[in-house]
Length: 438
Image 1: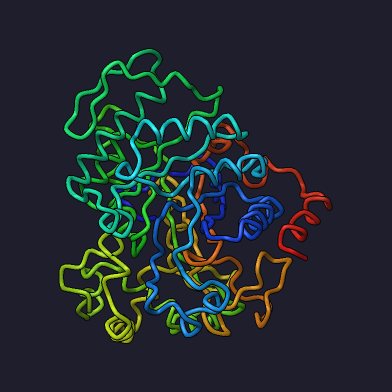
Image 2: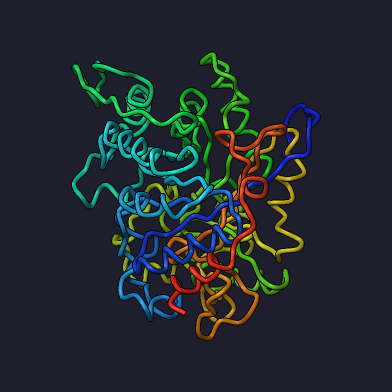
């Protein structure tokens, strides 16, 4: 990824690939995807934290996705903390974590306690992804959606105190106050939870550099934008007296993958993929030569409220998605051999950005071209072979990747996707098939 000066790589870098799961029932499907991730020797397994799905009920039908035939609501979601406890003994050597939660619905001490508990259940340090919050998880539930950055900064301070301190904790802030509070539970050696911050704007990038163990963006449209924002994270780390190269650069990325590049690009025209473009901020629409149908100042996913819009409004908005926006905005697009231009750009520039972690996430399968095969063992009805495996935020899986720093063995000293996992056994393959209901 381009940056002002190119630092020579000390060793060939590795891109560690993980799977981000949706948290929808049935539990057997979640279990099957987790076991499939082990079979594929993936490096990590993350879950989401939502009360509501991104896709509104108003357009939730088979025109959008075949999943609507199996699931009457897109908003059936498990609690992430309980689900991590369920997944922990099934994760093997994979890292597990949440990407991301926020300190509005849960007190930061509770967030810290939950991740410390998970650290006792896993073989590697869990990942605590934190963001400022999204409107759809806050406003409908009567919670305060103001002072987001200030609240998160205080929460990061409180969580770090809980992770590292023993004995009474005192903290006096605007949003949180602790007086003689105790959180003496500590992580086992080598398994201290890693705090990754989902950051895009200047203030959030500052928080990532000041407090984070990793930077975990989603809305990044190009390698050039990634390099600029990563530089801002590292500048903030230096200003805070921290080692900027100790912060893991990551990217949570939608991906559309087909047997051929042409097939993948045809999927960009499906309603589900075009609907994802509504989560792109108005600024990126303007760069594509169009006005965002939800408002000239629409900030994207952070301020999207699914229940606010009726079907007619949403259908008009989806129809207004300009050509090329889906290609240059949310997803990485291509066939497995070639990869997407975005991913190639990230790889080409990895020396300059000190090996940022491209995180590839398949977009929601829709229509015939987008129907997945399931986990690679269980073929779903009417799904053609070789098309996108995994499901997005209204399915069950999403592929993500992260590149490790050169010369390291992976997060928390682990070997990562290839070196740290043994060849999958026949019994594990059988377990995946059983979990998938075959």
